[in-house]
Length: 117
Image (cartoon, rainbow, N blue to C red; front, side):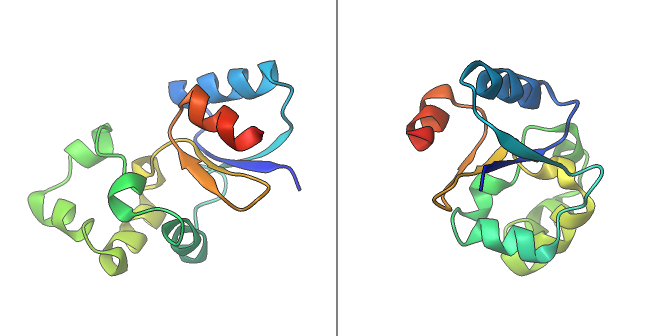
């Protein structure tokens, strides 16, 4: 199994990730949320390995445009998962799932390299 990289192809952070992995010679499977919406099962799997506050991208435009009520719904897994399924741009990018099943969120060269060893 190669590592799996989840995100949105046109995102600048994703481009940095792709370049970094190519530079390191790492093979990966890319899952583009715009072509394959994240399922509740996938998101629940992520949340077994990280917390909801880390998974939600609060810096993006989609989040900033939400009402306070919608933002509050992102504080609870039960109400957040359907929102993240429909608004995949609100999931921190990239989510990388490594061969050992661990995952990392966001682009951090040191963290990614640590998981690749």
